[in-house]
Length: 293
Image (cartoon, rainbow, N blue to C red):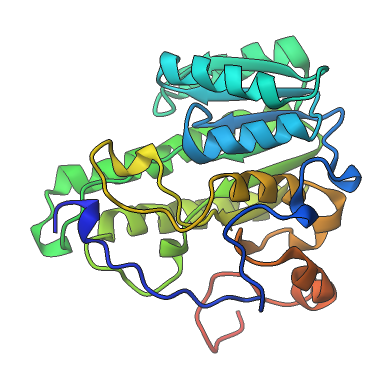
């Protein structure tokens, strides 16, 4: 197993009765209750795929500014054009080229953004990489550990740099993966292990900084450039779904999900119907089944 064409995607189990594969009115950025007016938003990996969709959605929701970070200048410039075309007229769109494995570059990029628009209100930790698919027993150690550099180190640099530049009521949306909590999928060991480590790191970050509103997200199964240019993997969900879902997660309506792990496919009305139960329990957190600790 050396390519994404060989991934066997299981049948998902949903927390809500209704399952979404595309945007719907309850999470629309144009909904008055979901307005991002006055908010400064920063998205890592905003040049393509999910990050680009999230940036467009916050622009549509009327954010004061939307800033994207990424390595590839051509992708960032293309994304800025798309965000600007979709955003409300007052939304300022910025980009910075940055290698997220380099802490100094991340700090410089965020300092430049905040000097232009002010403190960061919503930070979307989205950037990541999909390493080669191999069984654990056949994995080259250096390649395996490269996954942790691309998925854990990049997130560490991003959230550490974000914290001192955060606004008064900061929100951190962590784009994770279901592989961090489902049973193993063959060949996905390096990606799943690194994303599980990233998730646990973000959980500690949230516990150590209770003023932060942190939510982790399974964004859906979406065909993006993370799978490589030659991948034949077919997406199950429209890329706009996690974009719109993130706008809803950053709204006052979703405050009860602080510290939780949610899937973009789940129906928000059903989640709201169970608001108190979810907020006051260990529901939608990652742990050991049957042991409440």
